[in-house]
Structure formats: structure tokens, C-alpha cells
Length: 98
Image (cartoon, rainbow, N blue to C red; front, side, top):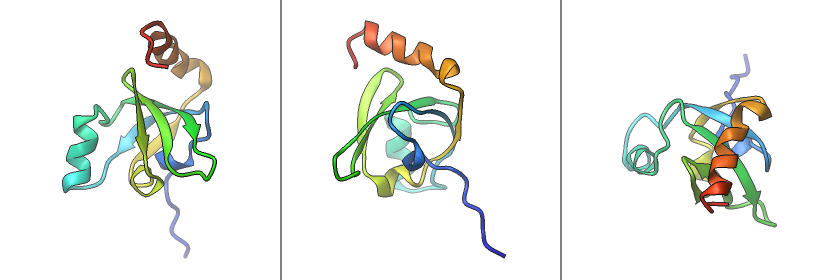
């Protein structure tokens, strides 16, 4: 049987939004993500992908954060409808984060 991997932050296309469902189980990266405000339930939007695809820029709690694909791939997400994520983007634009 082929294991099915849940979607990760890395799989988001620019403009796509998702809700964080899981983080790495432990270690420094989990702590770093939490320090950035990336915890379970956080709504994240992919803003840009570099021309070569790595890194990508994400809007996380009003701040634009660049993450390598190898790190973004460890964050489990649940894609959400565009309308559900849009207030986050509008607020970030009002505050000059985007």
C-alpha cells in the first residue's frame, strides 16, 4: 500500500490559503515555527515563489516570512476557500505587510 501524505505548506500555490494542521513533532524547527507564530489553526497564504521555486514567501499573522521548501514541507495544512482566508490578506495590506 502506498502511504498518502497530507498536504503541506510547500504544496500551496501563490495566492492559495490554508490552515495549519500539524508541525514537526519536536526539535528546533518546531520551536522556530512557533516563535514565528506558526501554530496549529493559523491561517497562512502563499504570496510568492521564487523563480526557481525555492524559497517561497508566506503571509503568517501579518508578517511575510520566507521558508525553504524543505522546511515548509514539514508543516501539514488543510487548504481553505479563498474567501475564508481573504480577511487576513486585507488586514496585512492595510498594515503595509504586503
